[in-house]
Amino acid sequence: MELTVAVSILICLALGCGLVQGVRGVTSAGAAFPETADWIEELSVERYHPMLRLLNEDELAFLRSQPGFTPQLASQYRRQRCQIFRGYLGCLGGDFHRLVMAVQVLMLQAGADRSDLASLLVRNWLAFAGAMGLARVRLVLYRFGIGRVNAAGLLSQFDGMRLALCARVPSAMFVGA
Image (cartoon, rainbow, N blue to C red; front, side, top):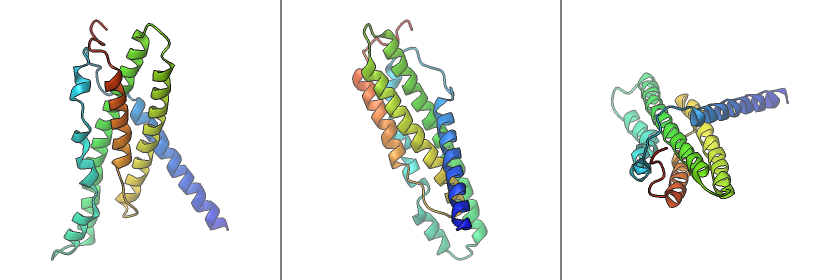
């Protein structure tokens, strides 16, 4: 019984830390905000598609089948892949932060109340922060050979926000901002 409670507490702490990291990654102002809205049309989820296969177990299984494979090689492989994945997470968080700022600018420049944009912003921000936190927790577990990381949900959240913004951005949104 005590072991179950201890494990539950550790899991809750890990999820809490992951959520804090996810929120921190989404809210950190890592990049300058462009003066025109052209960057929104150029922003694509395609740039993050390598995340979908970066931690694929098939490559590690292939390495295990090769002569000379050692557990140290597996550990090094996982560590390097996790570092690369963290880099992608940082870039994705920065791009999402720019999307959030663009929605905020759109709300400020609107002549009327834009509660629809506020709702979109809060809903997508919370979903993305949660997905980012979960990805970070799973990445730590993956590093030690436990479980898998699936970035599809995270990329879907990002692309949903991007598409929602693209549908609402007037052509001269940032001129003079």
